[in-house]
Image (cartoon, rainbow over all chains, first blue to last red; front, side, top):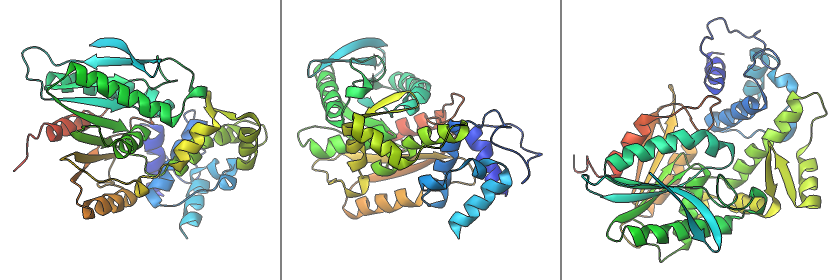
Length: 78
Length: 279
């Protein structure tokens, strides 16, 4: 979870993520979380974890909360 | 700082030349091959900051807007990889004319790095002393996929139906062009970029060209990406002189807020000037 928080923090250039947890809402809640942010986050995940994300895996649900994002990454790595 | 248009096969290419001040020895010249689309916009400050520091230290810099980008002639819709090759070659010729006894190198950022390597491989006659690669794009196909994601992501964020990759391919086949995040891409350019992969370029040095590979990241990252290391090791096996550097910093070519990385400029210049060699 910490890795994901760090990833989101960096990609979005956020200052304070101290109260972030798996229920923190992303898409639609954090203003910086726009389509550019989605692309940056997906690219960073691909680069950092050496995985390839297919277009049909990209869905609004993945970016609902930090928890859903983390689950997505865990599934990719398994 | 000298802005001017350089002719490239009949097209006007906008450039800015950062010359070395009179009291400083002009040691080298670097031609900057820029990144693609939004990455170019976000990197402008980094590149002009670099050019300023470099010229003060004796390294003249030519910043280039490739055909169809920035203030150069043409629209992106008409740009091709071949035209961009020609742009760089024309600018190199201009530099050679104006800097007759100085070593000239290429500095490529992101897809510009990929282009720089491709140009170097395919132009035997070019006399290039250094090829500096900042965060190179290794896989053109993956790069295009990530770029096309901008359009997919926009449809995810919006409330309309999500477009599929197949739909985008269809639009491309029908119209010959595809609009992504305000950028009009033609199918030839997309094909050209997809065809490039640094893992399969025919890189061999006839002269003493020095290659350097730089990547930036934030902790806990402290080294090049595994795939980059693998490629560099392969090049080194082929007896290429490749130096690698990891610099702590923010990926300024993709951040929302404009960012720079002075450490990258300083490290690059130290290496290019050979300041710590033999230590």
